[in-house]
Amino acid sequence: AAESNELIAEKVKVALANGIKGILGIGELLEDRESGKTMDVCKAQLKAVVDLLEEKDWDNIVIAYEPVWAIGTGKVATPDQAEETHAAIRAFMASSVSPAVAEKVRIIYGGSVNAKNCDNLISKEDIDGFLVGGASLKPEFVQIMIAKCDFSSLFPSNTLLKRLENRGISVLD
Image (cartoon, rainbow, N blue to C red; front, side):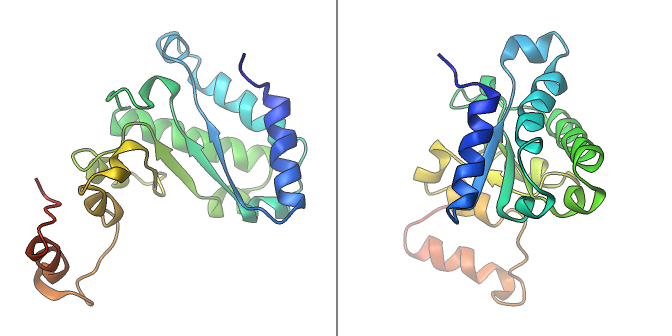
């Protein structure tokens, strides 16, 4: 049986009380997405946590939007679907906690992120990073890690990629 939103909220509160920073994973089932209930589900998951925490606590939490239907399935939300949900999460945080928290809380995307889709996802305004699962075990993980990074001042002419390739690690295939 799935854990309730309230139990998850209690776990977050206990973790924070013990000095543990956390990633709060939220997301909907495929039937929720298909019936237009994505934000109803995500808001309910967030509200349980919002109701227990103080504004300062959000400095130690990252929100991960992970549609359940995309975890490990190879299916991924389109960049526009992910952005729409991330923007709605940010708006919910602004109205439920504060605009300041909404602005600075990191909202990351998880759900079959890979080297082929990471650039399109990270180009969206409200997607702050990724929660990477299976792809973290593959050489392409380097490409995912650098999707939003500008290493040009440190490694002109993509020398980082060349160094990795010289070691037999291909990240662009």
